[in-house]
Structures are given as structure tokens and as C-alpha cells.
Length: 420
Image (cartoon, rainbow, N blue to C red; front, top):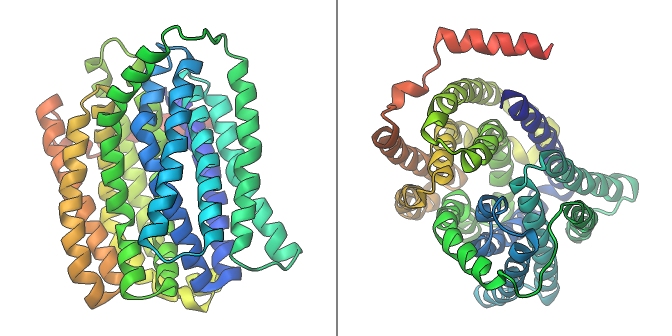
């Protein structure tokens, strides 16, 4: 398990570094306003992808070991197409955006949705090498295409991001079909398709509702800032958020492997002890990473991203407590998802949302992007507190079970020595 976690962490680390490169390129060459426009587009795409998960998402991973991949793919693709079309129409109704923006939103949301479905199926069959390769390739293509356009061709306008995203998802999507075709599943017309679609819908509704609510906690502040300020303010906020959330690659790397193992395990209770050990090391590593990030002076941010982005440091400091809390939250929510207790995660994200909405409404008009950061941290702390309470009731392990001990440090040292 540790080896797989380290491999997944290495993949996510490389992905995070490339994602940082994307943030840097868009901030450096498009400025705060351009970065803000890109952030709002990415957020719109992410919102559409969230509703796609109501008939897919993590439930594809859950059902992949038990059902034909092609019987899962058909309803997932059909639902994704409907959501992207309807979602684009909703965006056109709610926000004043040009038709070309809507065209890119529809096309790129579809590409991302199909790619996500294919890679989820690969992960559900424990094709982790293929999953990791495609994940890294996608981000590498986006970063590389942006670098070529901004630096090589001197083409520094927001639409460049759209065209680069076509390349970044189009090629990996084609390759993912090749990997799926290598698996033994074969299409059998009409046999089990309706039952599979019904089961997928039943699992997805409970499993994915928490993701929709979590997205509101993570990104609702962008829309508040865009409303009360402008795209430039969203750009500065997005850089601070991107740097803080990059640290989440640590808990998410461990959580992904834990989820797959829980889904396949016959004895769920036996997974609690290894989960807690990894959770303690994850929390320790996350805290250290947050301290390093908080120590960065504003001069570093202005040197790296540009003069407009020095204001991102106060955002990072105010996000720090929430980032640490999420490390614990991810571990707990992964456990509940792995054992099929989706309602707990839904309640936790609802608690967070009940904090997010009033906090954004009160703090952002008064404090701007710093108020957005405070509101976000308060939301994370509230939802994590709820999850810790329910985790203790389910497993008997309280908050103290997440605190690293000398034995954990010795274990980590042994792992490091083996890795060397």
C-alpha cells in the first residue's frame, strides 16, 4: 500500500508542479485580470463536471470491479452530454458572457467529462499506472502548449487558454480509449445495461452530492468576489488559493489509494488501523508544507507572478488553518465513502456550506479577498469538526488518533531509508 501511495504521490507532485506552472504562466503573461477570467472559466467548467458526477464520479470506481466497463460508460457519457448542454444554457442565462465563451465552455466541458469518466473506469480496475500517466500527460500538455503560445509565439490573450485545453484533453482522451480496449470487457448489446445504469444512478446520487456541496464551499467565494469587486481581484485570490490548495496533493494522494483499497476490501474494519497511521503522517507532512508556504515573503510572490500578486500573501495566511483542516477531512470523508456512508459526507459539506454563504455575504463586501479567505477557512474548520465527530462515533478514534507519535516518525524514517 505504501509503495502505491508513494507512486500516486509522485504523480500528484508532478501534476501539482505542472499546475503551478499553469498558474504562473496565466498570471505572469495575462495579468491579474486575465488570470481572473481564466479562473472563472475553469470554475464554470468544474461546476458542470460536478453535476456530471450525479451519474458517475467515484461511483464508477466503486462499480467498475463488478460491472462491464462499457455498460457503465454508456449511461455516464449520455448523462455527461445532457449536463454539459443544459449547464451551458444555465450559464448563458445567469451571466452576461459572449457566445464564443459559451461554445468553448460546452466543448471543453464535454472533453473533460469524457476524459474523467474513462480514467475513473481505469482506476476502478486498478490500472493505476495508466491513470497516473494520463493524468500527468494532460497537465503537461496544457502547460507545454501555454508555454509555447505565451513565450514562443508571443500570443498572450485569454483565448489561448481555451485552445491549449483542447490539446490537453483531446489527446489523452484518445489514449484512454486505447487502454480501455485492452481490458477483457466486451460489449453485449442490451444485456445488463439498464440494471447497470440504475445501480450507477443509485450509488452516484449519494456519493456525489457531497462533492457538489464541497465545490460550493471551495469556489463560491470566486463569484462573490467577481460580484463585489472585479476579475482582477478574482485573479489575485485564485493565485493564493492555488498555492494553498496545492498542498492538498498530500492528503489526496493517500486518500485515493485508501478509497480503492476500501472498495476492494472484504473486511472494512481492518482498514482503520492502516488508515490512521497514514493519516497521521499525512497531517504532519501537510502542516510542514503549510508552514513553508506561509513563510514566503510578498517579494517572492511579486517576483514570480508579477507586481499585482503580492496581495496574495495575506490570502494564503488566512487560508492556512483551513488547508490543515482539510487534510483531516479528506481522510475521514474517504473512509465514509469507501464504506458507502455517503450521508455523513453530505452532512459535513452541508455544515460547511451553512458557514460559507453567510460568511461570504458578510466578510467579502467588508474585507474583499481577505474576507473570502477567512470565510473559506471557517467553512473548512466547521465541516472537518463535524467529520471528526462522526468518525469517532464510527471507529472509536477521536481527534487524538490523528496526532503523530514517535512510532509514526520511526515508521516514516524506515520508509524513507527503504526509498533511498
